Image 1: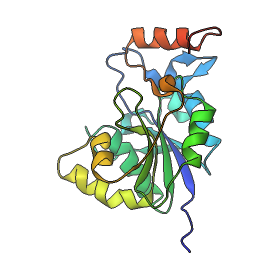
Image 2: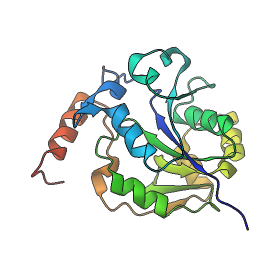
Image 3: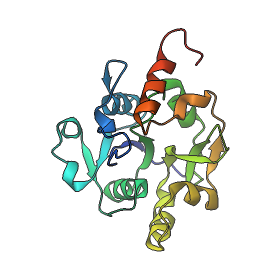
Image 4: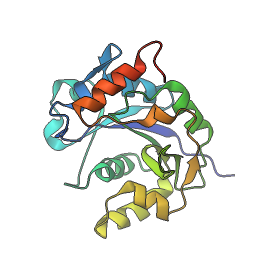
Length: 201
């Protein structure tokens, strides 16, 4: 009988935050940075948790607090972080979460972990708006590594398109805005408003 691979955690924090104009990992949300919050949520479901960084980010104060996985590919986006993690611990599956999901909660991650299908290359939520896979709150199995590496080597870097074409298990999202990401100051303000007690969320 095949044993499921142990589950490690990866918070993707290697972006340049150009539209936000402030490092999204350091933005405060509910009393802690977005990176600290994401790491706390991910660590609750994994054997060990890491932050994904570009080489030039290793010494930044917020990222230096955590174990790191360094990107090896340039200008590939989130796929670089996923591939680097898979290469660092090839016998592990990876619970991958983007740093800019301030409304992500423990229940949403717990439901994803409970729905995990290790026989699929990945288990991911369907985005509430368009029903497409959400690769940045997903569990990536070891079996996804070789095809993802080939996908990227072929000049394609969109992890959503990879999941669409490689048979990922898709899970219905119970809380529609749990995976709302923040890319601009207006997004950030809206997330803070949505998290206030008594909001419509």
